[in-house]
Image (cartoon, rainbow, N blue to C red; front, side, top):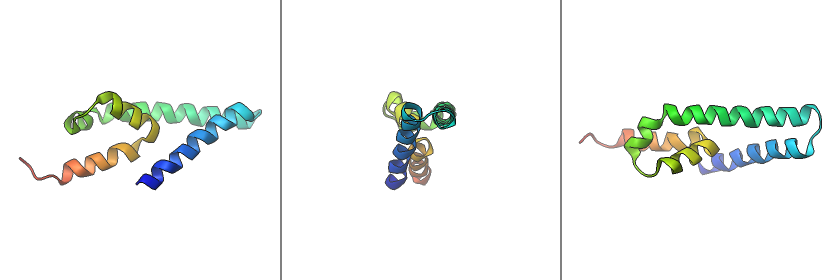
Length: 87
């Protein structure tokens, strides 16, 4: 899963580079992809809020990690919690 997290950084850096150094359609696409990714990840955080509360820890940490990595942050948490025996 860590390899996928590294690939997400390529997307973020690519979008920011497109916005800063691109012109016309390239800059527009970079901005749209970046904005859409942020919007989706914010929704993703609130959809998974019960999971994060169950997992414990800082909700701010979970928010930032979900904002950056999306499902690559919360999927392992869900798998871990679902594999624990019921108490």
